[in-house]
Amino acid sequence: MIELKQFKGRIADSLNSLYQSLDIKFDIKGNEINWKVVSLYNECLNDVEKEDYESLEKNLKRIIIEKGEIKFEITEFKEINSDISLIKNSFSIPLNDENSLGDYDFGPYLGTNIDSVREKIHSAKNILKTCSPNYYYRVSNLIETMIIVGRNPNGEGIRSGSTIASFGCVINRPEGSGEVLQYIEDLVHESTHHMVFLEQHCDHLIKNSNQELFPAPFRQDQSKRPMSTQFHSALVLGNVVICMEQIRKAYDGDPILISGIDEKIEQMSEWFYFCCATIEKYGDLTNRGTEMIREIQENVRNQFKELTKA
Image (cartoon, rainbow, N blue to C red; front, top):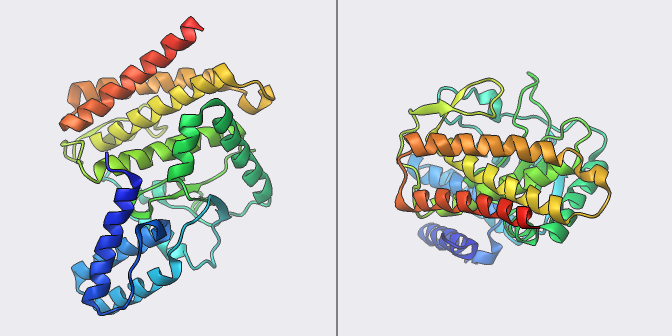
């Protein structure tokens, strides 16, 4: 797997080549690459492909303003926001014909409890830090920004999501009272996607066509998804199960905060094994892709073994 430092370094090298080609006197460093810069970089690549050099220059100059390290932040998505196009563009394309765009759409956050949302997300991170430090490190290392969103005007929208096109940024729509355990799941879920994004930066992992569709057990609409989604799901579900098991074993705080953890582990374990069975039967993976699925299966088995011994 490519390391995060290498990933950002490659983007910086590519950007510096673009700056040089337009005779813009600027040199960006790898540690100045944040999710906004990644989003703008992808806009730059689109500009090059379309030969729109006026837009390219505009985006390159905006990167100079947006660059810099971002400490973990939680912000609201509002209609009037300079980042709105960056976020929307990153989530604008459905994966396949079975995906309605509404699945990936979202609107401004209309709630009045943003401080409570922030408090619960920080509580989720603190529980990870105490009970599952390896996942805390992954979350802290890979997620820079959580943007709290709402539904689109049709009442649809993604509940939690991330994309390599805005690497480092996660969008999240609070459901109901937004329990701490759900935020733990969301943080581990999206940071695992980021881990897979890094892997996919140097290896396709999945050779199946996106036109090959398979049932997704956790989809309430019973729609099908390509093997790439099955692959991501297996990695996500396996890691969430492992993390939840670690928390169940180590947590000694207010039990209300992790209420429902047993049911969550049981349901996600079932979905995990379903995805693994689908991949085993239909998956056409690269060597690294096969290795990753075997690793997560072994890690899940080992986690349950450790808890049995305990």
